[in-house]
Length: 69
Image (tube, rainbow, N blue to C red; front, side, top):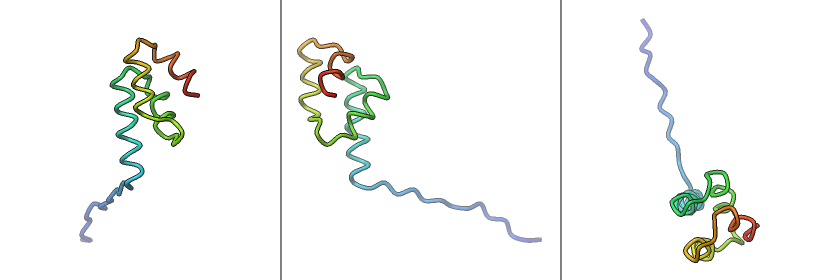
């Protein structure tokens, strides 16, 4: 009988992907919807600290997305 070993798949995450994931998680924790957080996290022109500052100053996540787009 043939030795059937399960295939091992290693998933490698680049540094850029780790940073993008971290940014998205920070945005979600601040109240942004998942899809908006993913979009904003992937954009290099969006300053994470500025996005979070909008929320801290009382801006709704929906309005912050409009401002940041």
